[in-house]
Length: 375
Image (tube, rainbow, N blue to C red; front, top):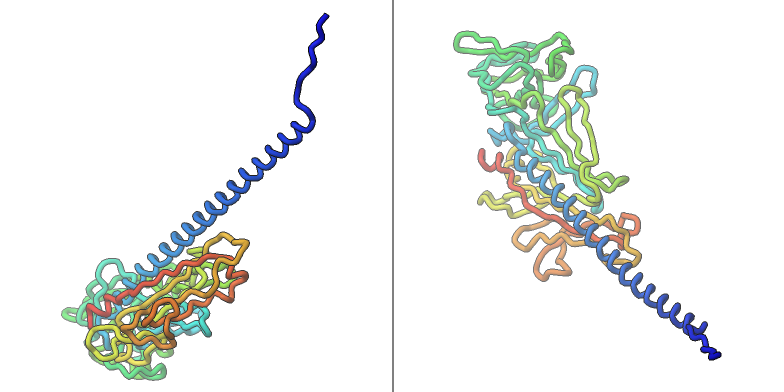
């Protein structure tokens, strides 16, 4: 009887095979890890692009519309607007398309846009007779486009604004009474919560100038829901917040609209020599009508951050805002990346582990077209 020797794999061969398999698995896992990291970086970079683009687009739309219904007479710009809703504290607005609140030491700015919310045309209404401080009706040349519930701003005929004696006032139109050639827009005194906006500046003796409003004053129509909107960065959530004022409640509703927006910087674009071209950028709000007429544009920069934390440091320095060399920019310095240009540093070093994230800067110049068209 013939015996055959049994053949198979030895223990050494099995161990060698296991080692080769483990090494292969490690190589595959390494490749997958790198690929996954690249995918996450790409995805988070795309998120930053989308958030930044959407946030900038929202700002573009509002700033382009800023001043609608307010800038028909550029001489009125800068007028302090006194307004008070029943039971609420007194507040002041500035009759200007945009208002920049400068953040200290590179902290994010906030940007407020102001425009009429009137559907259709918003046409100024000329006052034909002196309107005393305690007189109810405004006698006007025409009440075209004015409807019950519209919020109106009474504007004095001359500038030289003074919050004590020469200022603008907001009130509600409660009726439109035809009187032959003249019309009267009436301010309601009795509180009526069932009717929209009837509780704004009812007390003319407190909220109108002591001398009232002279002939050739005029009324601006904001509609029932004026646009008074503020964009700001929430340092706790690292999001661009939008605050909307409600005329019906007198309060502002704030929400985080665009995540991972970590800085907002804004500059007034001013034409200081009267040639129609912006030559200066700064954050100094004008104090006179002539100063506001110089503001022809707003320049905005947003810094969007990726949502992906990187194990290694991927950002070595804070980004620069390149403002070119043509205009004077208050506080700027020579760019380190572009020779001959002026830059402002966009602060992000206040963020936790800021070097472990990637950033994208979105920059644009937005003309104030309602000011330009009426200049």
